[in-house]
Length: 121
Length: 128
Image (cartoon, rainbow over all chains, first blue to last red; front, side, top):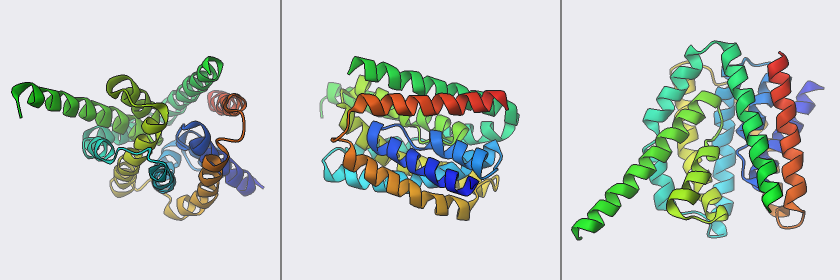
């Protein structure tokens, strides 16, 4: 049963990516931790793998609509390794509980952002 | 190239580096793509429209996420590859569906729905 829920939440994560442009990771991580039973760090790490695949499909489709500036995208990616290494190291050094609470704060921040945008539209 | 052109290029590169570093740190720390950081900065600093910012952000996330997955998997062994690949399938169904129906339903309702889902996630994490 929890596998089915994990699948449904992952569909919702992909939908969120396509519909409102928030990355699916904010839903992939809870799908992996709550329904599959991974720890917070493992859920986040596995979510990154899923994001790569989903972003690849999403970017390919957006490219078809002329919505991708390849040069800027490649430059941002190429200049990200320092930040990535800092973030990954921090996620492994922080206590699991601190990481959970920080992730909860991020989810609330993104919820507020969505509501603000919906009210402005 | 004149001197002011060179300065403008340098400034642009510096801003892209700032976006890349911030998105990378966010992505590595939280296991998300970093679009929350990339999209608003492309809009504010480069004057991108929302669609162009989202599309470009997705393309950047392919690289940022790959680096993050490599570091988490290669250095710390935290990536559950089979689980991730299996759950990527429903996620792809979602993203393809999402882009297809984006035009047909009111954006506002969708935003409220996802906001509600995120609040539920946060409450669950806080109460753990």
